[in-house]
Every structure is written in structure tokens, then in C-alpha cells.
Length: 185
Ligand SMILES: [Zn+2]
Image (cartoon, rainbow, N blue to C red; front, side):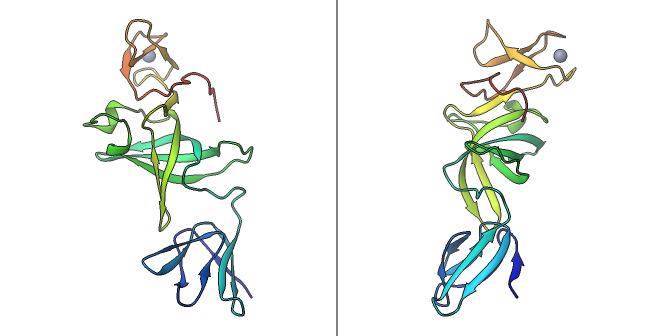
């Protein structure tokens, strides 16, 4: 009987097993990097997880997701799509305030709004925690007015602001290079 395992779950030590697909090692310990069936090969001394997730999330991948909540130090994002894959996923992740932009960001709420669709890069997967970055050309690809919830468009006047065509509200966002290119996920 093989065991069903989730991201970040402890599998064993690197003395016991060689970490294979669907796992990662940290401080000599092996954890699952995917949800699925844990396959331990005691003969070959390997540990792998046969993923249930349609696509395995990896560091360096570009993902699309929506902003679930904004806290003091981070932005919680639900990843819905991985670039290059048509499968839909539902993976919780976070962008720490220092990973939002290349310059200093004081408050995450100055860069994103709840419900915004963002394009980000996976920079770290550790114990089930997924860290994203929106530095460089990443950021919001579709955002909504905080006042009236209508879609925002790029402002002609201010290059770092978005404007609501409905109520005229100007809003700050960390904007992706291809803002407006993604309508929905
Ligand atoms: Zn508005």
C-alpha cells in the first residue's frame, strides 16, 4: 500500500533515500514537493511522489494567479495556471513585500488589490510554502478598481498608474509589461 502525501510532508532522510521526482531535500531531510502517491523503493533506496497535480510546480516557472488577500508583509496569491500548461491548478502561494518590486515597497497594498490577476515567477518552494516574485517585468496583468470593481486600464498620463474608466479613480499597481493581455484565467 502506498501512502498519499501532500506538499511539504516529511518523507525521510537523505541517508535513507535518494530524493527523486516530486520531492526536495533540505537540511538532510526529504519532503514532498507535490501532492500524490509516495513511492518508496527500498531496493534502489529512492523516494518519489507520483503527482496528483497535473503539472509539477517548479522554481523558475511563470505562473498566473489571483490575489486572495493582502497582509502587512505579503500578498497571498492562488495560482491558477502555470505558463505552458492548459491545466487548471489551485495552489496557495505568497509574495513577500521584498519580492514585489525591484525598488523598496513599504506596503503591499500599494502594489496590488484583492482580485487582481498577476503574473509571477516561482522563486522558492520550501516545506509546502511557495514564494513568488513580481520583480522585473512581472506584476498585475489585470486589475480592478478598489472603489467600483470595474477593470482598470493603463493611464496615458502616469506610467505607473492604472485608471478606472468607470469612475476615473487612479490607482497604483506593480504592473506587468503585458498588462491587459490576460483577461481571465
Ligand atoms: Zn472605479
